Length: 61
Image 1 (cartoon, rainbow, N blue to C red):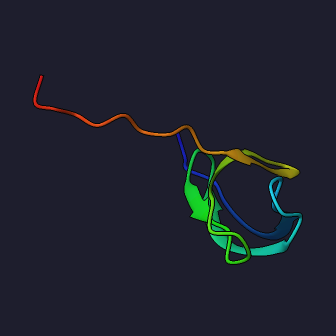
Image 2 (image 1 turned 90 degrees about the vertical axis):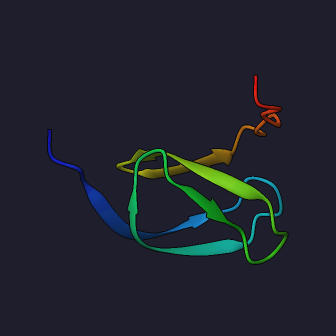
């Protein structure tokens, strides 16, 4: 399976700021420069961003 990367422009779903993406892959986490939220690249064609799921702390369990 070959990993696909794209360079594109998208919009933050939280603050609607333009985000310029360079060589991103599906499921990659990127950060919005406008509001600072973490976003996950859900689709590459067209590039679709959603709020990234918050990671729970791993207490060594």
